[in-house]
Image 1 (cartoon, helix red, strand yellow):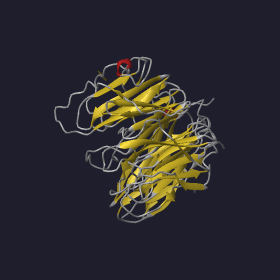
Image 2 (cartoon, helix red, strand yellow; image 1 turned 30 degrees about the vertical axis):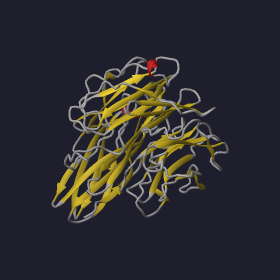
Image 3 (cartoon, one colour; image 1 turned 120 degrees about the vertical axis):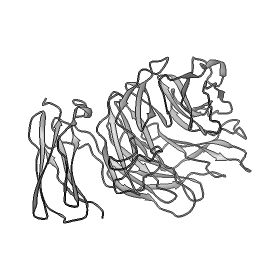
Image 4 (cartoon, helix red, strand yellow; image 1 turned 180 degrees about the horizontal axis):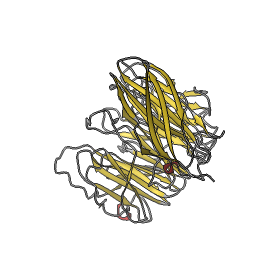
Length: 469
């Protein structure tokens, strides 16, 4: 039986919320092509989404702030099929860039394709990429920079794409320094930019090592201008890995084994000591560890790093989509559920420097869904990791039912906005009534009095919140 949810919102004072809006569909189709969406958000909070349609073409959708639909959709002109996911970047409110790869006839490789809009997504023009025929320039990841450039990274390769005069006819071949004792593993890469320095991180899906190369200066297409592959120390099971650049610098988040993830900041020469982060968890506390990794994304803009991922729902068979953020790349907020019991795959997230964001995902081979991420009131004065659960008796069994009290933070404050919720799972009577008492002070006890089938049950959680200003 599906859970029955009784939820309450307790507000200490009126202020903008740190929350997700309702989920809405921006594309629907039936066929065999996975949409694999990507997203960018400009300074106004307008979302720019690109995905593959059922003819493997690149389709663009513009999502205005606080509107649950596209106000502009169009297909980007191309004479061939899009090979895989395209990447979209908002250079400004008016300048939107999409980069992807087009299949070469006969399956012998791919060519880089570039589209650019200078009117905020109303129209796109295809931009020729110089000397691009038959160069097999597929890539795993793309990042904006350094300067007016796109950095494209694939396993042991780097390509720089100048947006002023696009040239991608050469790529640097990088030595990874990785060993692959198992053999036959799929190899992947992530690319990021530390200041003006491109960095490529490499790994084997089935390997136990993570390496990186950085540009030392000069022409990025010259192999001699790159460092040899250097191993990131202390890594056990690196797949998957993510790179994003924010105010604290270039951040690497990678799997550290056992479903745990570590974050490391780049110091200009290498990645530093790891900090365990509470993001990218794959399964719920009630579900067994079934192996595998989440569909996830790491994004940074201005002051914050944003992470979004899917997680096996407690009901089984579906996923929850979660969002977390960090100001320093070392401590992330308690994950906020932004979609519940959905088919969440290929999760991607982007946000403006004002924390107005959009998360998208494309389940299987059918639809593309999205949800707005709301501004975070009081964010600059109080870091979300400073709001945390400390413990307490938040779970009780009553007959065949299991009750649990969850306390989410819509805003850490000051002021503080809490979102206590009581869930019931299992068979038996439904919840008749819930009353919440959230206490006061920096350390407080959140109390839920639940009436279930004539029985009174009390659930409590202790939390620590940001101190008053």
